[in-house]
Length: 258
Image 1 (cartoon, rainbow, N blue to C red):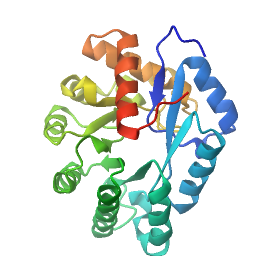
Image 2: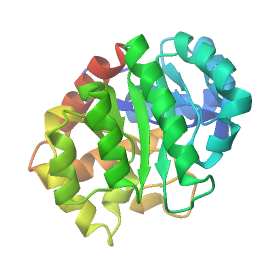
Image 3: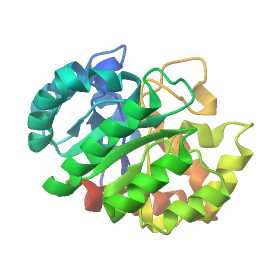
Image 4: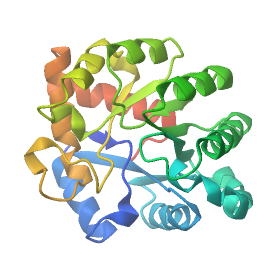
């Protein structure tokens, strides 16, 4: 890999769901300047798959184990094994609250989210938080957990009000391809008030491709376009955004890549 160009970190990439093999996706990522990435599971099966991918690519992939709010009702069956996996993983998640789809009862979502927050606290691990139409309840849970920068707001969509409120908790914000969408003015205003030194970039592969790739699956190589959008909003050089967000990823996940 060239050393005289900006290197990026994709802070959230479901490699197990990509259409191409992890090797093909990672090769294209390296060519685009992506040094390493985080691969979070969303349930027991995908957390195991994330572990396998990370073990196969130890210099390029870190992994997380957790239960997504869509499947919160599975905690009774999967919770014990997921808790054991979390003790091995680099982070907890993807977990959180989703009041948009409501695929699990909200009371169960909250219970399972709290359980994973407790694991993150007990194990001193970062936690990757999904928040959709659930800002108030996610805020209350994170305020109680007091995890600071180890709480990562994945694919953050909040506007200025909620971004400022969560900023007070010292969380880490992670921005995905939606920041490039023409309809995302509220999100861009949220980005404008987020602290650049506590932000990361992600793809959420294979979902949420940036505007230039809306008709194809997302992949880590495209994280560069999200970073360029942040640079425009913050009035910074793209290389500086790459350096800053990569440094945050190293600090949060405790990994240095290649």
